[in-house]
Length: 349
Ligand SMILES: Cc1cc2nc3c(=O)[nH]c(=O)nc-3n(C[C@H](O)[C@H](O)[C@H](O)COP(=O)(O)OP(=O)(O)OC[C@H]3O[C@@H](n4cnc5c(N)ncnc54)[C@H](O)[C@@H]3O)c2cc1C
Image (tube, rainbow, N blue to C red; front, side):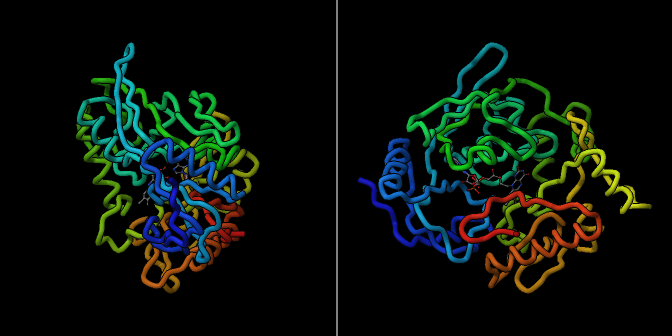
């Protein structure tokens, strides 16, 4: 029988280590408990929120109403398919354990995604990506409980609406699906992806092994406090706080006009728009690494990460993020959008 914990603290479950309690918290170690918990909440007309590793969440100081469903499903299987191998991991598997396993087996496809915190089940939510790789490059299917239809479904990549840090799960149908397992299609003996100049330069060799790429990615990430290292003063973050803005030609011309004399980095997108660097915009708007206001500030190693220190509250994070966003908007006329998900009574607007 389901026994949710009432008024359960959530701060220990997220990497910012802030936020109030959940009205109810249930940990699901099997799919039956997921279904039961969703039905339990529906019977009481309570909202359901799904919690993974809490590395992309900002939880309001007053906490969240409803049922928080902590995903703790474990297990991994693999099967050979023509030209590849399909690895299926339960949603509660730690993401980086899966990446390490695939790299150790010489299966290419996830190596650049080494060192990213969180659990497997969250990777399709924002189409997790780094150094030129995204999970949508290798994702073969998502097994999920569709709360709208009340049954377990298997979604093909074409149904997942993947985009830059975006998906059906994040923006078109938030809350509708509880991801139960994800299947990735990888290439045994395949070459590592080296499309990102910083990583290729750092490695130096022409044909590095998958483990060499993984080690390099983790080293580079560690130098930016982008892996979770206990003892790192920047550890209480949710990674990049803002998305890189993607703008059309007319918006770009207006931004360029304000950025006269500055070499603004840009990456043309397949749809003709252009991706800009949020970190560059923040720095050129006058914010510096390590700049803090009370217990909240920018990481000393990465302009895009907002970091909490002792005494920080969610409202301090939101206030600081608002100031950064306003500074960039004032300087360049671009509005930055947050990457993490906000829970409870909290927003930047
Ligand atoms: C130091 C650091 C570095 C990071 N670097 C990167 C990076 O390089 N690239 C990148 O893309 N992200 C990065 N992130 C962000 C984060 O790690 C990823 O978004 C990760 O996938 C979140 O996983 P999680 O399990 O912690 O999800 P959570 O934070 O628990 O949840 C995030 C969202 O996903 C939903 N969710 C989680 N699990 C499920 C599920 N099973 N079913 C349905 N919905 C679910 C939640 O409801 C919530 O909306 C970084 C974060 C940190 C702290």
